[in-house]
Image 1: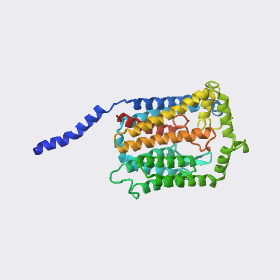
Image 2: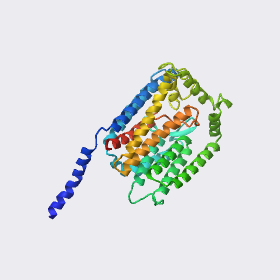
Image 3: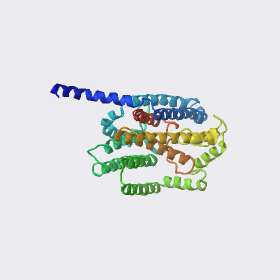
Image 4: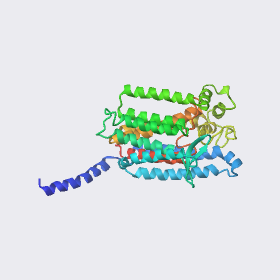
Length: 388
């Protein structure tokens, strides 16, 4: 073979590979369609339920029953834009941005702690005021951590057996983010960050013995942090028995239970919720699932749970069939993040977990959470699009 022929083959080989992948990979596979449809349905449900849950208080406080709805619609459109952008970018091109995104998110977490820059609400400084809007850096941290872990754990030169090159950096980064989040304080997001990191180590093939040690240490640490602050202890005991303090720490749990029980099997009808008339605090954010259960009943609430279960199963199926280790870990991390957060939120509304202030993905009111979640979901869709 001549030198000229070798050069031609070297130049043509990448283009031949791309054509093979495109022909062999369905552009709109079954997984892609299911993920997209379910996520859009949950997001549209969120827009409707934000209007239903917030209109009464919006009219009372702002003189405009559409106050939160207009914001949610804007964020939903921005979320669709973010999803469209990440869907069209090959997920392999995101690898170089893993470490820079992590640095930016950690830097923003530090800025939140600086007086005058961080915006406080309900005793926590979790937002940055950019003038035209406030952003929550902890939401970006979730995506940044997933990207970082997927990139690090899928490198051939850094096998998982080399703990100094893989396990220790991930533990250190997760610990740093957790410390910064606890300084806000935000225990709920800290726990989600930790569980997502453990999930990705599990999917990467970490030994069960080491994983068990990490899980045990994390559980002990979470319990210690919960008992270290008086209000967190009250939330824990309020979850165990809300009637010990029904007018304070047990109020939200009791009112959420009343709303869910009022819903019965088929609900009392869209817009007819009684809990939103000042009885249930944060009805349009952390406790929006209770309003869904009250207005649509067990059937409607069950369909929401089934929707998240479908996202979880199809997301994990996408991870198992992804074309490369980076795609597998990235899909698994995004799926685990959404499922864990949904589990924590619904568990708190049902009174089976302590209240942590974690929103329900796609459904709860919130700008940064919705935009970042939909952007991350676009990455998952991109992987599903390239999955045979």
